[in-house]
Figure 1 (cartoon, rainbow, N blue to C red):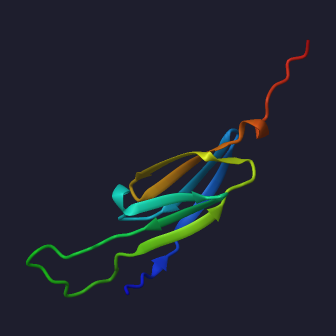
Figure 2: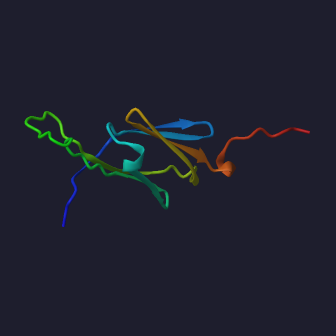
Figure 3: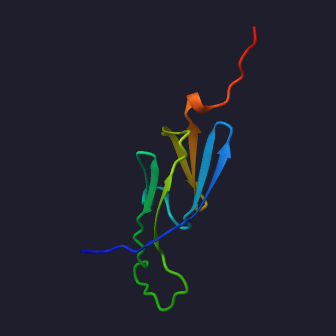
Length: 111
């Protein structure tokens, strides 16, 4: 049975008027190597990388290693866990989460 050691990525969450932006730093991870799931109000990230040396090469020294990342974060109560969009570019996974419509500020017309 293979065990995986996970590294917790750096994460930052910012609030917008209509939602939240969550950013994970996961360098070297491609789109097909990351899984993002919602379990209740918890956002769960796991990556899985299979690094191999190119054919005919062998590693003789290393100052870094490839790693798998895992993290979970509880979404704020105003977040809509069904309204998520994720993009991955340049080692940054950005998750845009909308607020539930009933929790957003709205202008009331006075008649």
